[in-house]
Image 1 (cartoon, rainbow, N blue to C red):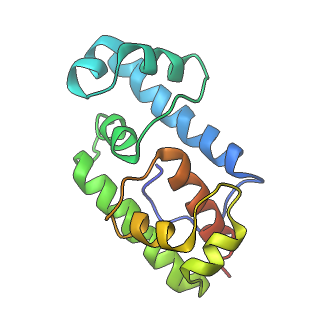
Image 2: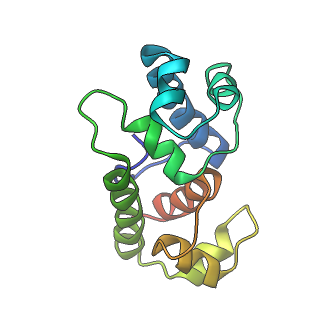
Length: 141
């Protein structure tokens, strides 16, 4: 589950995202595309792309909406809150500041944007979340 605290990561952000997308696709397959579309604000085409092994554009909130449909999962807002809190906790554990995170990111975000997104003051795509989480977990002792 992407919102849990990560202390280790696979070889790349792409591998990490693929791991999470597999989990989300499994939820969509179990619940059914139509049901998930009706219970979230995601388009059917996006859900079909996810189950087909593609990497559709998702926001962190949309990923949380899908994740919340899994058995025993919290609501989407709680998932987003936990995901962001775990990023902050990971930064503390790894002794990283936003400048250090920015310097290791493979995507184009500056330190101010990283800060705003981790604090929930700016929207975060799922892609951005995965990249930030990867840098933080990869830097953990």
